[in-house]
Amino acid sequence: MKFKNTYRVRSSEITPDYEMREYYVGMYFQECFAEYAVAHKCAAPDLAKLGLTWITMGGAVKFFPPMPVWRDPVEVSAWVCEIGGVKIRTNFEAACGGRKIACGSTVNFIADLQTHKPQKASSVAGMLEVCKDSVDIPDHAFDKIEMFDNGCCASEGMNMIVQTVRFDELDFNMHLNNVRYIPRALEAIDKDYRICHMLKSYRIRFEHEAFYGDEIESILTRRGDAFTHLLRRRRDGAVLCAMETLWQERP
Image 1 (cartoon, one colour):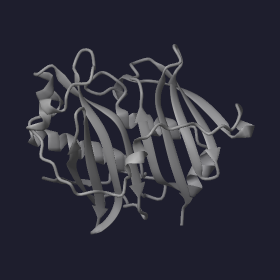
Image 2 (cartoon, rainbow, N blue to C red):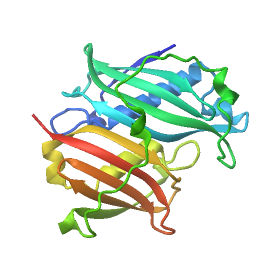
Image 3 (cartoon, rainbow, N blue to C red):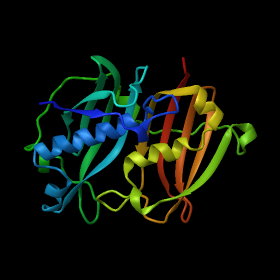
């Protein structure tokens, strides 16, 4: 009932110290679940034939340093732990050398391919296996994320940058791939801070889709080693996602 695969840390995923950047674990999780879906004949190409698609509502990940280094094998496990009326929750774990380096959870739903209106999870429930094994991600990790009220300028704890969605960042739905939201949000954090700190955990909640050419504002507020992030489409002010990150000093 668990799908497992091993991924080697690539040179494009490492820090100047050759350690894997933490948020790439989320990309491994997504890849592992995609392969799980292929094995159960409910991957995106399979669902497209039924006029359906996968949509991710949110996710949360915790990290347990040290992170693996370049070329280390990372063993990832993915399993569906709960199927509700609409929502489908998936859990993940990642290990290197027998030591857990991260755990996480995502909430997804099945949607109409054209309208993206949520459909009943029963439309794919028969294709999935449920494993009740839990991870250290509480249910409240998927609650609404509120930005810290720190004022409106960098000197008061807020920062903002603007980035444009590139064609090579689009997924099979022709939207900005959900794993691309995280590095975009983190880009607003000061470089010197990121050099000296590493991610302890993050949680993210998706609200709207972004498309090719969209200009996205990445807004940041900070309280100590906790940050809140907001990605907002510039042309209409639509909130694309909110994220919360916790950091710790590098050893």
